[in-house]
Every structure is written in C-alpha cells, then in structure tokens.
Image (cartoon, rainbow, N blue to C red; front, side):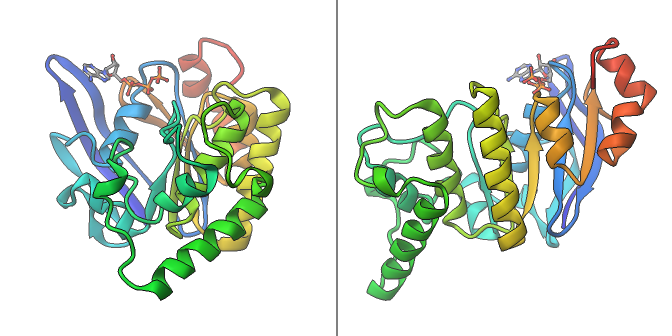
Length: 252
Ligand SMILES: Nc1ncnc2c1ncn2[C@@H]1O[C@H](COP(=O)(O)OP(=O)(O)OP(=O)(O)O)[C@@H](O)[C@H]1O
C-alpha cells in the first residue's frame, strides 16, 4: 500500500537518499532502521511532504503522495507522531487529541485556523472517538489536564491518541522510544501492537531501539548512506552481513 521507489534526495552536494525503495503492505508493521545519517528522517520527511525528492515516486494506495501538500496527507489516511512531540502545552489532553482529527501534518498550525467539523454529528463522532482512545491509552483521568507538565511517557501516549483519531490506514512513528525508560518502551510497543491488531492500520516505525523494532515489526528495512541495504523479516535483517557491517559489529 505504501510504495517507495527509487527516491533520490540531494542537499547541495550531499545525497541523503540514493534510489531508496521498499513497500509497506496492508496491516503490516514495517521497521526502518539504519545508523545515524543513513537517511531515515529524510525519507520520513519525504513521505510526510516536508521534503520534495529530486526523483523517484512515493504512492499510498495508488495516490501519488508527491503530488500532495503537507496538510493533505492526513486526509489520505496517513497520520504521524513527532520525535520531539508537537503538542499544544496549554491545551488539555482531550483538546490535543481532538485536534488530530482536523489537520496534523503541520504541528504548528494555529488551532483557530483549523477547519473544525461543520456538523454537530461530525463533531460528536470526533469527541466519541477521542474518549475511546483516551480510555484505550490510559489517559481518561488526564483528559482535562493541560499537556504542559505531564511526564514525557504520558505525552507520547497523547501524541499517539492524536495521530489515531484521524483513523489512519498508515501510522508513521518517528523514533517513538526516544527519551522513554525500558518499561515505557515495552508499554508503548504493546499499546501500538494491540491497537494495530484491533484496527488494522499499517505502521512505518523509524527507530534506533533495536529491541522495539525487532519485536514489533513484521518486516524490517535497513538503510545506510541513503540506500536500502536489507529488507526482510527481523531475523533475516539482524543477520544480514551488510546490516552488521553498517552497525560496525554492534548488535543490529
Ligand atoms: N536539512 C538538511 N540539510 C543538509 N543535509 C541534511 C539535511 N537533513 C539531513 N541531511 C544529511 O542527509 C543525510 C541523512 O540524514 P538523516 O537525518 O535523514 O539520517 P537519519 O538516518 O535520520 O539519522 P539519525 O538516525 O541520526 O536521525 C546525512 O548526511 C545528513 O547530514
């Protein structure tokens, strides 16, 4: 359903992406790994329309993503979380969640500029979905608490609720384990897997935490120097000599 083909992205003299290609199937969790500078974030930013590749194609369910603007991506069934969180500190957990139903391709959109559902029925549906997600993510007690001051692990769950409220078919997770304790990583992985099994969305997981990627993913793509160097099951990719070499012998 997500098809990345021959994507090239240059920054001046630096080739960040060099004919990258892979697919993420329906209902699949795909991990995207690679050492620092491999090109993972650049690729993520191409999919979410922050960067425009120099060549290649990215399609999602047959739609040419490269023909869309950043704010249109969510309407095509793609939602994302942000590495450094992109919540509104003064808004409550519930309000931050509801905002995800409208437009979250750009984290800094002014809430007043957001197109709210025009009908009462549509608004009611969004509210209902928000409460369901808060319950699933163990955030009910914090619904009216401002995001500011909440622990980082909790904010990651709010980000997840905000991404899932748009009922995406593809969820892009940008280093979700960053800044979390081991227990919080395990908890987040279990929550994502549980929701994914229930709702059937696909996941593209960009992550350095090998334990999380290898335990969650159906399929792992490894990158180095802007290229895809391995693509297979977690076990195949872990053992792939090119992957081992890319990590210079560290556990991959
Ligand atoms: N905005 C930019 N301007 C110039 N070069 C960039 C820019 N963004 C990324 N690069 C370069 O592109 C290459 C790929 O970087 P990228 O951040 O995509 O890698 P990464 O795999 O996400 O790394 P990390 O795991 O450290 O986040 C690197 O050589 C990086 O220095």
